[in-house]
Length: 146
Image (tube, rainbow, N blue to C red; front, top):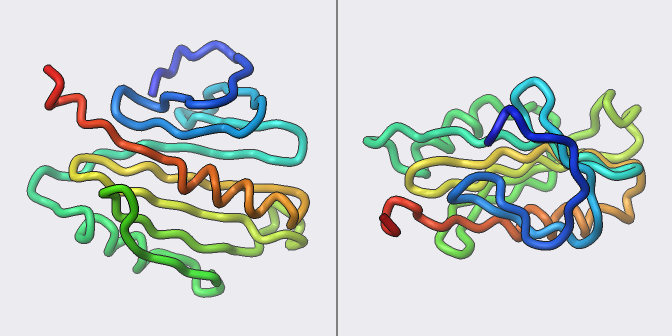
């Protein structure tokens, strides 16, 4: 992700990197903050980070430490594969939302990197949108295209 990103409003298919993209179902503001991509609109915020995976490590091995470090009070834990990606997601009540609505954390792994999304929303009705955005993550191997 680029640290020199100017604040902008986007919707639809949005590229996170050359390889990763996601689909935003409505208009969102996008900016960089503390080296993380922040995608937001009123009452809904996504913090996004993209991390490398060591070449000798599998997506499943990279996921192991995330599972180990997960908060003890996480719930609605899901793990699986979708569109050739390994994913892991869970919900968590946090001070960020005044413990009113549980945040959604999503990790999606390719063979070379993974995307971490922390999704915070003010209304439980937004959960399905949050989950849909997480499920929309897609990976295109740029190395094969060169």
